[in-house]
Image (tube, rainbow, N blue to C red):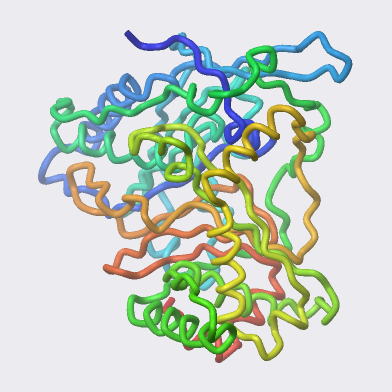
Length: 441
C-alpha cells in the first residue's frame, strides 16, 4: 500500500529556500518518415504520466504547517494526494536551431532558459506550485525536453531515474514493462530522535526568502560548457596523487579520485582568473557529501530523497595559488570528504534536529564555488525512441557566481562542467593557456 504522507528530512529541509532542479536534454528531431511529430508528442505525454504514477510523491503537494512555539517554526511534509497539478507542456520555436544552442562560445541563457517550466520557483512554493513539470520544445531541427522538479521531494538520483523511466516507457511505445521500485520512505533519518521533536521544526520565513530570491540570473554572469576528456582526467588525477606523496611522504593517504582532481583543478584555475581577489582573501569550495553509504545501515540504492550534507574546504587565495598546487587542493577536498564518517553523519543528523539553524539564502561573495549534480547520473542513455541526446543543459534555478554543474560527457569517460561565473572571470579563463589546454569545447 502506498504511503500518503512523507515528512521532510534534515537533508530535504536544507533545500527549502532554493530553486527547483532544472535539467533538460537536446535531441535531433525525429524523422517524419517514422510518424508525424504530433504523435511523438502524444506518446511523450502518455509516458510522462505513466512514469509519474511510479514516482507518485511528485504528483502530490508540499504542505507547510505553522507550529505553536516561541520561534514560530515551520514543518513541512509531502501530501501524496495526487492534487499537485504536475503538467506536460508542448511549445514550438520556429526560429531556433540546434546550432543556436551548441555553436555560441557562451551558453545563450535567454534561449535555453525559455525551454524550462517553473523558472525561479523556490522549493517552499511547492505548497501552491506543481512539484513536477515538463516542457517539450520543438525546434526547427531538434527537440529540447526540459524537466523541473521540487528539490525537497526529489534529489538528483530520483530526478534522473524519473527521466530514465520516462524515456524507457516512451521507447516501449507507452507500455510499462520493467518499472523501477523507488523507495520514498524517510523513516531511517528519524531513528533515535526524540518523538517530541518530530516532525522536524525549522525557523523559516517564506516572505523573507522570497524577497531574497533573484528575479533572474544577473546580466554580469555568463555560462560556458567545459569538457574534460578521459585522457586529461587521468593526467590530472595522476598529477594530484603524485604531488600529495611529497606533501605527506610518511602518512598513508587515500587516493585522490578523478572528480576531486578535476574539481581541484577548477578551483585553482577559477581563483587564478578572479582578478578581484587579493592574496589574503578567503576562498571556499563547498562540496556536497553523499550520505547514502554513510548511514547506518546504508540507505537503499533505490532511495529517492535527499541524502546529503555540505562540507567546506577553506583557505586563502595566496595559499591556494602558491607552491602547494593541484595536489594540495585535491587533498584538502579528499580529507574533508573522508572525515564524514558514519558516526559524524549520525551526530550531524541528531544535532540538526535539536538545534536547527535558520534556513535562508546566503549572499553571493564571489569567492566561493559549489558543484552540483554528478557525473554518475545516467544522462545520455535517455533515448525516447529516436536516438540519444546530443547535449544536456540546466535552467536558471540556483545560478550564481561560482555554481558549477557537473554531468557525464557524451564521450565515454569524459566529464562536462557547466560553469557559471562573472563575465570577466570566464573571459579571462578563455585566454588562460594553462587552463584551456586541459579542456575541449
